[in-house]
Length: 226
Image (cartoon, helix red, strand yellow):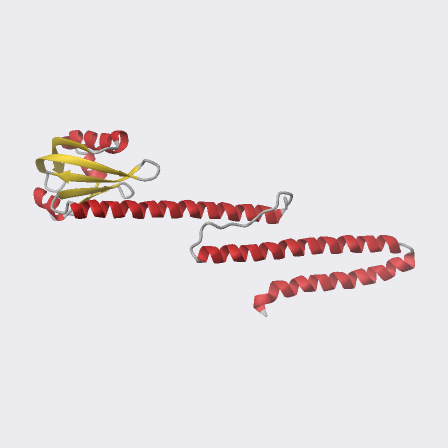
């Protein structure tokens, strides 16, 4: 019964209204205001029917919308009518905005998966190379085994800040930021790089390969060390 509690209460409201209306109608008939009582009752019933139909239709549409989302179909929404401007229309518009936002998130997720796949493909093709993966979402540099071997460290992950804040790495920082923020194309240079772990410094040839998303923003960059 609790599952249908709202329906039971909604029907109960109608029954209470009809009982009160019948009693009021009898009283109005005795006092000579019978016609006015009929109009008041008709208007009240029309209001109740309108609200009932609007709520019922929105319920059906929202259930269908929720099922599409649960099935992974984000290309969905609730159809709205041009002439309706009531609260149900406001809720439908908000629901459609939620669907739009979910579509954007799903697109970003797909782009990130594609970026990750491309990065793995490139790393697989050049697995014999020492590579640092710059991940902008987490602002971290990740060193593969060959890259860690060059610097003689076992630490795999280091933050952008820990490397870029060192004065010794000013040349590397400028070169890295220019490649991923301005040029956004593969760049190569011979320079020194110092890691914060035991102040290890190596002079190496650095090739930066930025990987862009659909909006031409670099989210991942591969740094090959030679």
